[in-house]
Length: 87
Image (cartoon, one colour):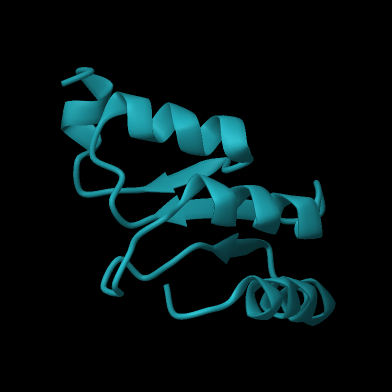
């Protein structure tokens, strides 16, 4: 991705201070999409104070479940119908 783990932590802390409601893993246009590791790190930093949106590269039901189990409570995907149909 574009950010190191240290930069992700800083961005999450700044987001909390600024009063954000959510943090988001990626735009979906970078070199990689959401990763389980990034979602877990973001959730660890923001706790229950902010939501975590996983976006980018989530194309299957299994991908969505992995992100949810890692701490995401919103999923950004263009494969929503396929995921709901478990395709």
